[in-house]
Every structure is written in structure tokens, then in C-alpha cells.
Image 1 (cartoon, one colour):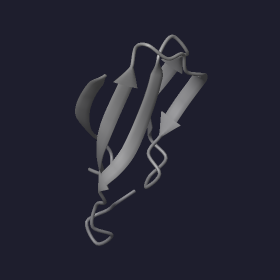
Image 2 (tube, rainbow, N blue to C red; image 1 turned 90 degrees about the vertical axis):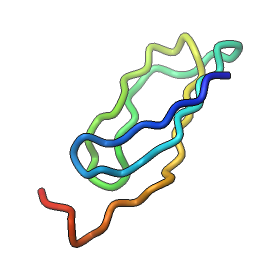
Image 3 (tube, helix red, strand yellow; image 1 turned 30 degrees about the vertical axis):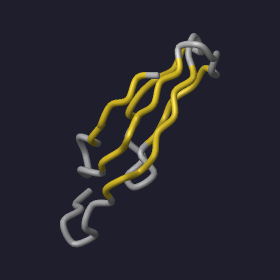
Image 4 (tube, helix red, strand yellow; image 1 turned 90 degrees about the horizontal axis):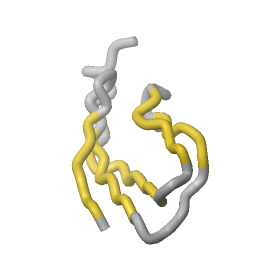
Length: 63
């Protein structure tokens, strides 16, 4: 298992990213649940999971 911290470049939300090389995932994209920015595209070769750890301030968020 590979662990990493990821920050959304648009809104600053923080995520913990987990990658399991022993499990197959699904193809698709992961979008930031705060601002809908694409953070990663998956090819399905491995299982990747994201967990929101730092939600940005609503006052600091600008479209």
C-alpha cells in the first residue's frame, strides 16, 4: 500500500490518497468533492482511494 497526501490545486482541499497495487480498480476520474476539479484519472490497473482530510474555508474559496 502506498500512502500520499494530495492537495486540490483549485480550492486547496487536502486528501489522503491510498493506492493498492494488489487490487484492480476501475477506469475513470476522481473529482474534488468541493470544487469538482479532476484530481486524477484512473486506468484500472490498481485500486486508488481518496479521503477528504482538510476542507477549505468557504470564505477563502473563489471560483
